[in-house]
Amino acid sequence: MLFKDNAVIHWAIMSLKEDCLQIFFFTMAGNHLTQRLRRLMFQNFLQQELSFFDEKSNSTGALCSKLSGEAALVQGATGQRIGTVVQAFGTVFIALVLALFYEWRVGLVSLCFVPLISIILYKESNMIQQETFGAAKSMQNSSKIAVEAVANIRTVATIGREALFVKEYEDQLRPALLLAKRATHWRGIVFGLARGVYYIIYAASMFYGGHVIVTEGVPYDLVLKAAQALLMGSGSAAEAFAFAPNFQKGINAAGRIIMILNRKSKILDPDQPVIENFRGTGEAKMQSVQFSYPTRPAVEVLKGLDLEIPKGQTVALVGSSGCGKSTVIQLLERFYDADAGLVALDGASVAQLRLAELRRGLGLVQQEPVLFDRTIGENIAYGDNSRTPAQDEIIEAARQANIHNFVMSLPMGYDTNIGSKGTQLSGGQKQRVAIARALVRKPQILLLDEATSALDTESEKIVQEALDVAKEGRTCITIAHRLSTIRDADVICVIHAGRVAERGTHQELIDRKGLYYRLYKQAQ
Ligand SMILES: Nc1ncnc2c1ncn2[C@@H]1O[C@H](COP(=O)(O)OP(=O)(O)OP(=O)(O)O)[C@@H](O)[C@H]1O
Image (cartoon, rainbow, N blue to C red; front, side, top):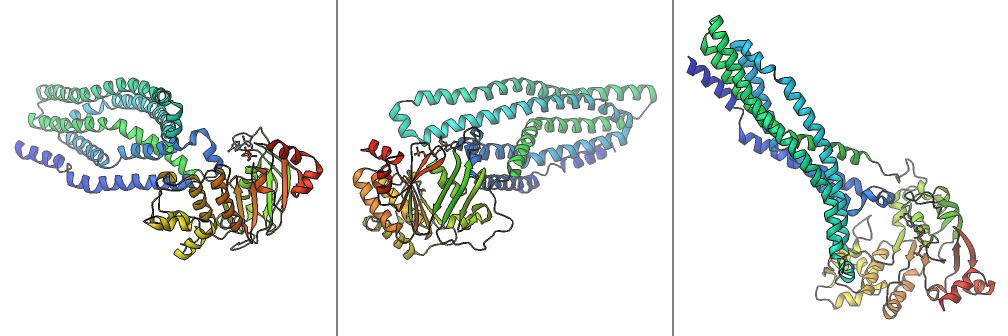
């Protein structure tokens, strides 16, 4: 009889250890969850406004660390572990029911230890919370340094600062190590206590069981069955305890992920755009625009700037370094919103247009072209997010950008991969691919922010020719330090102290002998 009942207890407990179920169900669910969290976080990062990326805590390294680290912590608390813990709790529950059923007083002995277990778990969870927060911060700071060093390895090697970066990296990792060391002692104590409680519960139930057998004549087989059930139950509880740190870390990471996912961009589409399917004619305007960068609110960059950009004209923005020329372009692209005043295309405030439609009409070429580790054809095609441009449109854009002949001279033509950041192309070639990328979307307004500044004289000439072709029939806002490149602009605006201080053609401004004249003389 005793053997039969024990076999039932064994069967009830062992049947919960269905490893196949755990592997197929929980592991798959954990992997899916982690992948989904990573995708959602990445999607959310890319939807944020630019000022989000200006914040120190959101550097490339920190965001990459969040993407990999936080989701991994959640995964550490999911998958097969959930299976183990569910199984452990199931076992504890069944063990308690059986113990109470066979000899309820012996069963109650084990419940006396619940407060002790709760206190240990509470203390441990506090400790882990501190540890995971500190470790996540430490990982983000160190990743920031690693990404910065690797992304700029040529500069780091040139200035011979490898050792400095390694030291900074190590310094950032140290706080995580210190916290982990402290928490490890706690975890050791908790682990020891968890294992200890397992034996203490068994000893206490046997002791009390012996007592009731002797004093009350309770059948010894009932006491043995109850004690046996408790032994199994407390063993499973100890197993679940071992995973408590992972769960605590997972819960903390999940909290941080939810905070990330709940963050909405401050630059959003309007509820009701003033113009549906906006294409724009190429006319732009800024009126009394005031602006400070969110990370530097005390410094007002634009202090009531007025700018009229008529359709089809080339307007050049000049002024001393840091006067706010690129900021004008960033406001037109709606990378940031002006604090006051109007930024408008075709009379409609940029905030009242759909972002994708607004940006589709603007072709931006910057000083340092950013190309992706894809083929030349794909890099050009990336310029139009509203559709997949046909091959002949890609070729046409490349022709206009004066890069087609070079591409055709390559063995793989448009299928040539250009390497990470376009390292397999010269500066001038990269810039012309970037121009083709800006042209493939057939923008109404071309924004040239120092597009030729980083090039040598020969490349500058070739790129300038490409730009001259690209400008034909389009509005163009161009920023250049080399005033010789903007002499022919229809209007030149000199930005000074956050406003347009002078405006006119090259000759008019030279004759005025004001700010432009001084800049021009300085450049000679
Ligand atoms: N993301 C940013 N966060 C905070 N301040 C910024 C940011 N970008 C630019 N600034 C500051 O805003 C001011 C205007 O910058 P902007 O890039 O518009 O100047 P610029 O006239 O184009 O300069 P340059 O001719 O040297 O390129 C500068 O003082 C600059 O330090």
